[in-house]
Length: 386
Ligand SMILES: *Cc1c(COP(=O)(O)O)cnc(C)c1O
Image 1 (tube, rainbow, N blue to C red):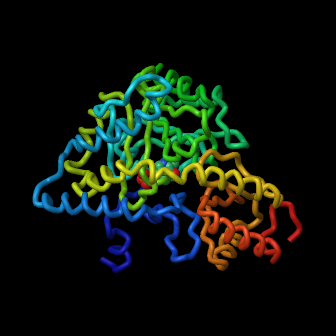
Image 2 (cartoon, rainbow, N blue to C red; image 1 turned 120 degrees about the vertical axis):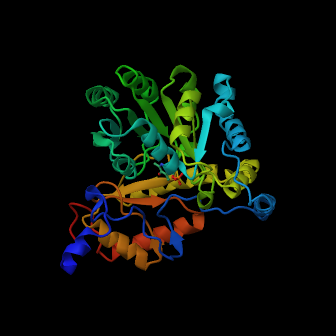
Image 3 (cartoon, rainbow, N blue to C red; image 1 turned 45 degrees about the horizontal axis):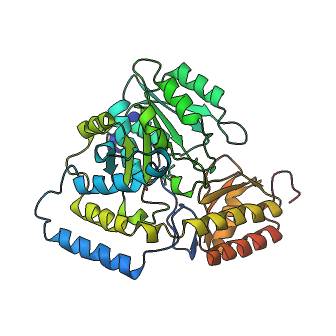
């Protein structure tokens, strides 16, 4: 056998994975990192001390497997979510309605493992989160890419028709959407949950509220609709507003039967004792960790206004990032900003760049860098003379 032939067969990767790159934004050591929608504010010394003490206590038990059902954490997450349902709708989220895993990416992969699979399909509406098709690929689920309107909003009649046509068992619906920041229209949850319940096997509708805490005042969370829709799943994460991306903790709220179904596919002890301890300690500091959300929202709205004043198109955003363009050569703009020490994200439809909202100082650095790049004339917008 020739060397070339054995190289082609090794390792024995699934045919459809050959030549694919792993997902992920470039991790570069740059002063101003505005590329993965993290909360720019780290924990206070008191919060760090509490987390460290919780980890120390967990460390004394590390010869044993952790609580497989993470009961204490589920209870604490349920109490946290109830803050979005009790005042407005008068019900509490119960611990048996909560499921958690190592990031909401893992939560959603588990949903596809349980409810997708060969002969079934999953649907979302593009442009949207680029990990969704990967969950489908990895679980051998057919991927159907539905469409949004030109302004990135979702037309509910069109969305409903796409659900009824393809009969997905999983609909993935971020609100606010990534990378555009677009909020869902208020009736979307009811319309799409009813559509997905109208065929056999029926579909679950996953409202991915990774950026839910950044939504505008008065906008309800999909959590409020849980009692009406047994096929509704609301996914959340501690990675964004909660300022805990490094801990890897995502979770969902849904009908307890959905949580029970996921327990069939989860790996045993998937949430380590250390992860559980860190998340529990962080939840005790929720007011502090979420304390900058209002400021970040103000900073976001300021950034949208400023970019529009610079003549750019900017998508309306309810999240902690802004999609702007349209650049004739977005990669060149990304590169030029990088040379000024500012890392943004090359994502979304051709011509657009996504900028996460940082501290006021980081945003000032971004604006200065952006002005310089524009003045250098190497970053023309589409239709502009270079
Ligand atoms: C960041 C993000 C997530 C969260 O990822 P984690 O795995 O929880 O860190 C989920 N959905 C969307 C749309 C995101 O942008």
